[in-house]
Amino acid sequence: MKKFLQKFQYNSPVILTFTLIAVIVQLISCIPGTEWFHKLFCAYRGSPINPLTYIRLFTHVIGHSGWPHLIGNFTYILLVGPMLEEKYGSKKLLIMMAITAFVTGLVNILIFNVTLCGASGIVFMLILLASCANFSEGKIPVTLILVGVAYIGNEMIAAFSDDNISQLSHIIGGLFGGFFGYLFAKKEYKDY
Image (cartoon, rainbow, N blue to C red; front, side, top):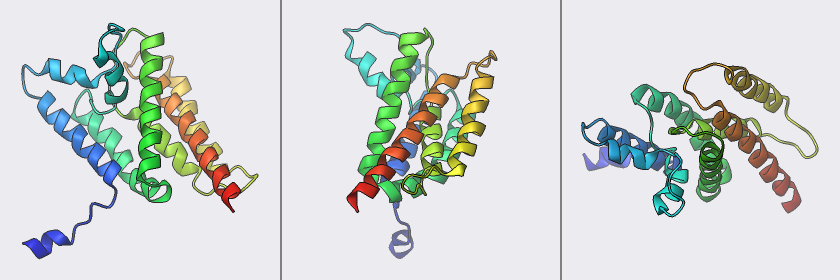
């Protein structure tokens, strides 16, 4: 049994740990009477003197509204995330995810008076970041433009529907993905 288990590699620590934590939170949130627990993983307007208000700006990406929501987000995260973690490193990817979570949470509580939960902003950040993976100095990948138009354009159109989805978080996540991709591509070329 030990030899069999040694064949498995925890190849993407940030993405796999993020996934594991989100699944555990979802499992606990399914237990009746744990609404208080689930609220720790949602961003919403709260008292500015309550430290949880600030913690939730980061943790809202861990909580999801249900299994379909979680599975939909983590299908993309597990597909794209490990490649990006290998390219950029665990620390950089974790920082990019934390910044995206913080900004999407902050924008939500400043502009809207609704609860935000889910990793959709992270998904869009990773998708646009992946589209930037083959930046050449001074050139913009056409794939970045097409993915940006397809994903962000669709979110701008969907913003006019009443679907209980935070398209603004998707758009912000995508913009951050493009920004991080450009920023780190530019830095790579300066290092040569």
